[in-house]
Image 1: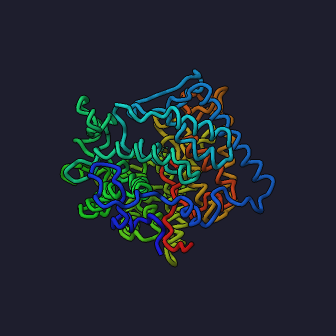
Image 2 (image 1 turned 90 degrees about the vertical axis):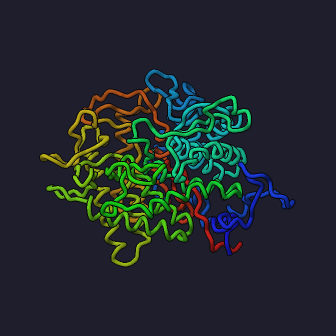
Length: 525
Ligand code: DMJ
């Protein structure tokens, strides 16, 4: 038995639907494709918001505190910045930025599923109403394919799967279509920037519509590993929901190209040419520029109900190479993952790289025998190192990057790396390690973060990043990032929930913490 709309069916084109893009409609008069939402809900192993059994009062109180923080973050965004992308909590206004190509409401879309899971019903309705009435997709501007995908497409897909509200599905599909021209390259590897201008016939009046190009700062017109490698989860679900295989097809060439290209020591450099399919530079990082590529390999396999063996093998091989060449132990006994520049190690770990504790634990859970324990230990050690980067600061929040050289251990050495912008990666790893080991230290560490956020980041009108984690009187950066609501607060909340709330049996989290369902293939109802 395969689940309705399971990936195998979509890719095989057995249930070809009215195409969402491009191709002319099929001649035979089949009923238009409709995703069977009720059937999908029956395929889940657990109620999405859990059963609330067996919890102690302290855990509940802590969870309620995090819910209060979410309400505070949302209420202030709504009051001062609704419809802008982020809240500026000190100046009490909105920020638009230039990542989303004219799209607005990044915080609304990023917050939807967190509001829903926390049972902030009224606030969820406010967010939904904004999406229904004010979320305009007819924009014309340069957007990051990656950011639009992980925040908007991921946020809308998760909101649809959690609630069954059609508006989220239709917006996700409409926006997904606008991203497709980015894939028109000789290799099929997309470029990083896309113009979201109209792509119908009227677009003839706008010469840039649907065009894509590479980031000006990326070497020689290259595409970035963490960007083109972080599309699979969302694009497979776009095909799942539309019945149109085009999205899944667009997302697959990257694995083909990456499998074929020679990898230095088995490692994946961060920059690749979408024209030739060759590496442009030999810089390898499990942090920024590389990070979520690795994450999406293991999660593609999990989301496919463990059918996508190609992704699993790529993950296993990559992790083996990372462990062999990049994982190091400091003089003080801390395990960390270094960066690699053409064979030379840079003994630095970014805050972004701290997601890897959670990822390695998630992969270990499914590794056999000794390898399971080995990778669990590695995941725990890395997470502990990231915790050290927090405890060694005066604020108990971690810096953007920390180093292991010249006697330094797990601390930033450069002024430019001392900031904390409400990032989630460390608490993300605490959440996975808690779920997979139930060691109480992860809840303790998460609670330390809650207290530090309250003390140093909470201001009169929201939460703000800070410019220096090594002073107890930090300056605020005046920005409440949308991922604080999507990820940081969601992972903290889940850390104090029972395991059946967004159970790992049913869901994989995209890299912005938006839950996407596993395509259960042994579903019989
Ligand atoms: C988020 O947008 C995502 O987690 C992404 O993968 C990395 N950066 C931010 C949060 O730090």
